[in-house]
Amino acid sequence: MTTEHSRRTVLRWAAATGAAAALPPLVGGRAYADPAPTGNRWARARYISAKVRRPHFPDRWFNILRYGAVGDGATDCTAAIRRAVKACHAAGGGHVLVPAGRFVTGPIHLLSNVDLHVTADAVVLFSQNPADYLPAVLTRFEGVELYNYSPLIYAYGQQNIGVTGGGMLDGQADNAHWWPWKGKPEYGWKPGDPKQDDARARLFAMAEQGVPVARRVFGEGDYLRSSFIEPYRCRNVLIEGVTIVRSPMWEIHPTLSTNVLVQGVTVDSHGPNNDGCDPESSRLVVIRDCTFDTGDDCIAIKSGRNADGRRVAVPSEDILIEGCLMRDGHGGVTIGSEMSGGVRNVFVDDCEMSSPNLDIALRFKTNSVRGGFITGFHARDIRIGEVAGAVIDINFYYEEGPGYGFNPFVGDIDVRNLTARSAGRALNLRGYPDAHIRGVTLTDVDFGTTSQPAVVEYVDDLVLRNVRENGAPLDPASA
Image (cartoon, rainbow, N blue to C red; front, side, top):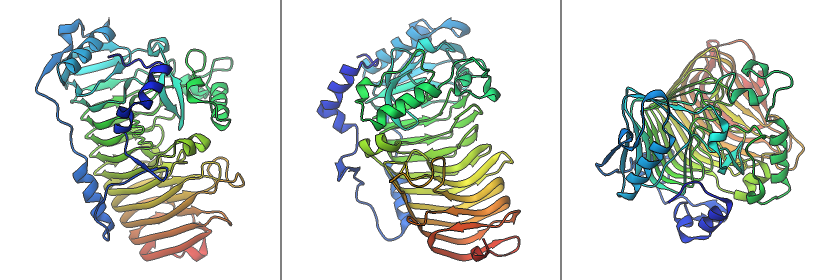
């Protein structure tokens, strides 16, 4: 079975009954949530934790050395790893073992019941040649579906897959490879060099015009970077223990997937758009005991962009984030900005965030082009050392702002037992005159020392219970 999906293959697959099995059923255009305890909101967090379990892999081991891989940091091991994955899958599943060594490879496409196990003394070095990531595969770029360069580790329509072990995954992106395509001098771009702007604008225009996805074919000459790990329309996914460095773009990007466990992972990558973990239009996701030190948002929950997000119409929901450490980044836990399919039932528990290079701790970014909804966000026991901007930021003015006909709905935001040492400001809550933020409750929150007053605009039902900044009760009326 090949994993290099032509457009025709993908369309056939999507029409088959197996495609429906890879996704939660749709009711009213959205992913339907299984019944779970009601009343106590945190009972649903326990339900999510119980539902999302490690997939089982048979005790079979397929050492890539047996299939021709050489760990000398120079030999191309792409074909050897592909043979090992196919053999593991054909045998009924197990573990593809990457032993000690430095293994150079192109994209790795996983198949059902296969765990890619990278041992503690192993480094997987991904090719710096973009042509190695063709032919194009179905993916999303900034929330819009297209055919583009393959993600570095990719799976399409598979179940029971893993990327595990204590080793390192090195995307080898730097100011000479991948990152300059962003078009910014700080990432190696120089006037006259190629960049992503024209292709990005063309892709977004195609989506707004309703061009079929099968005709949105990008690749060589378009300069749209890939994600690192992307399970697409997959079920039962485990990403555990590995360290991820130097990614072209987003690091861990589960898309239209269900039952995803990201556990004990370290992300240390400071390139452009180097988000740590971006569940997109995915359901039942647990992100646990991870460390994020990133060039963009540490965790960003998404559900498609603008018209394309509304076309797909699958929210991200039932997501539990617990025991994580966030260092550098634009946001610690972020929702958006690609959230046009909606986000619901997000739980953040027992997390620590601190860095002078962390802009915002809890960030919600949207506008009247994105539309969509955010509802049922619950955070507790959050410890924040230092953030440069706001601790909590709900901003309807991100990028395009108001006036485009798709006002977002944001409400049912509950934060409790949060402490911060220092921040630019406690709150930056900015709704629209014709679309208010609805329902923000803060309980037992100490914002520590802040240098700027809180901003609260067009917010209904803001409830403050034992909330302090600068040693005194927070008075949002003075914002």
